[in-house]
Amino acid sequence: MPDVDVAVIGAGAAGLSVAAICNNLGLKVALIERGRMGGDCLNYGCVPSKALLAAGHAAAEARAAARFGIRLPPPEIDWAGVRAHVRGAIERIAPNDSAERFRGMGVDVIEASAHFLTPDTLEVGGRQLRFRRCVIAAGSSAVIPDIPGLDGVPWLTNETLFELEEPPGHLIILGGGPIGLEMAQAHARLGCLVTVLEAAPRIAPREDAELVEGLRAALLRDGVEIREAAKVVAVEPLEARSETPQAGVVAVLEDGSRIAGTHLLLAIGRAPRLASLDLAAGGIAASPRGVATQADLRSTSNRRVWAVGDIADPEGIGPRAFTHVASQHAGIVVRSMLFRLPFTRVDYAALPRVTYTDPELAQVGLTEAEARERGIAGLAVHRWPLGENDRAIAEARPEGLVKLVVDGRGRLVGAGVLAPRAGEMAGMFGLMIGRRLPLSALAGLVLPYPTLAEAAKRAAGEYYAPKLLSAGVKRVVALLRHLP
Ligand SMILES: Cc1cc2nc3c(=O)[nH]c(=O)nc-3n(C[C@H](O)[C@H](O)[C@H](O)COP(=O)(O)OP(=O)(O)OC[C@H]3O[C@@H](n4cnc5c(N)ncnc54)[C@H](O)[C@@H]3O)c2cc1C
Ligand SMILES: NC(=O)c1ccc[n+]([C@@H]2O[C@H](COP(=O)([O-])OP(=O)(O)OC[C@H]3O[C@@H](n4cnc5c(N)ncnc54)[C@H](O)[C@@H]3O)[C@@H](O)[C@H]2O)c1
Image (cartoon, rainbow, N blue to C red):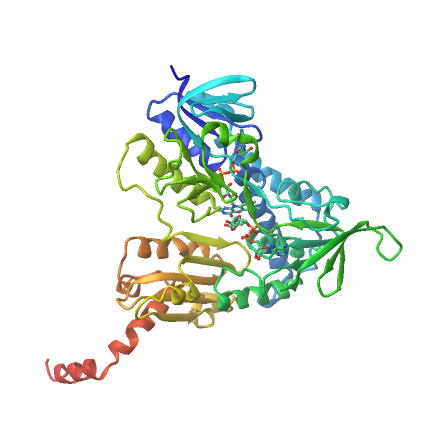
């Protein structure tokens, strides 16, 4: 007899959601976590990074108050206070994810490492655990590149960055993706020198080029140094000398230039945490992208096993490393594993993603480049600049853009926004794309005035403007004007 109905490996965003739902539906659940409850998002990811960004934002607002006619002295950064804020945010949320809370619900929380012994048995902290079904939710960790010299220098990842007792004097960040850019802005605004080294021709290479232009300008204004198409060929230790009193790291680029900093942050992507699971013993297929699953997140090779969150690789399309995807996966697993509903599949068509810099860069669905690559018939792109938005002007933040990508039948296939708090608009676009609503739903929406979201409505209005002002419509209006 199995010991449990469902064994969940990993108590991050994905595993916690699966464990809670299965438990609430009356199943016997074991939740196994070898590190901190809450996983990356709470302890080393979303929460500390957004808390640090918020501190940086406060400093930037103080520096920019003069634009409203308010003179303030330059802000003083109390790093211990900043750290206390970051720690406080984690501590405030931690009880939701705690072992105590889950044990109180009836889940058997096992604080140990798990690995497969057979296709239906795990070894957990020296004890064997037989399961009816197992959900792998072991997440991902930072990719450590194979750069000559890396072994000989200290480096940081998201797991150690938030523990620094002193602010980095000069933070070199390898990788200009969301982690690199968010941490670059947060540290620059908190008074650190920051250099971002991005190997691709431009930062945020997956994002819309036009929106990234505005983001780059904002980061440069904050003092971030950005080197694009920068290939690091070696790293060397930097000895403390009179001209560089803090020891650190030198990054040597392909073009021979040398960038010296006090700290090096690795933010070049994520790798699934497969190594300790002994998936072969469980008969579970995997690749360097993650655990191979069908579209319903069930393992392609072991029918008792599902994978969710950062470690899941559905149909070979690779992971989407977001906390909201972890929640989406939990819902899918419940439908496919517990209710055996057919046609349950992951669908990323309306998936939002946000880089939480200031301004934020939000994208839902396809970027213009992706839509063109797919050859979508009748593709049209409509824009509305924040310079034409009353709220943005009133708040002295007129830089930014809403960009809508529309198919030939007037349906939104993608939306990108560069604006303060752009992420707050993502839900509206997700609903439109997910429910396949016509663009008229957005163009006709009554939005409160003045809001930044009105820029989205105006961009949608651009789609209809040529039709509304056509010669045919003018003729109809001319005919009707004689009526009382
Ligand atoms: C700096 C940073 C900022 C981010 N910001 C955002 C954001 O703003 N918004 C967003 O949507 N996403 C963000 N993300 C991504 C988000 O954190 C992840 O997508 C999410 O945490 C994935 O959840 P998960 O449950 O799949 O994995 P994890 O949170 O990594 O949880 C997996 C857990 O499994 C445990 N584990 C692993 N192997 C074993 C084993 N053998 N036995 C027992 N336990 C094991 C680990 O200890 C870990 O706690 C960010 C990530 C980083 C790094
Ligand atoms: N706001 C958010 O939602 C958020 C924030 C942080 C992380 N995340 C998630 O975590 C994932 C990982 O983030 P990430 O920023 O580490 O990875 P990423 O893969 O998104 O970006 C990594 C960047 O590093 C560059 N790069 C790769 N190798 C390099 C090298 N050797 N030298 C210099 N640059 C190199 C890539 O071209 C890319 O631009 C994200 O894709 C996202 O899913 C989300």
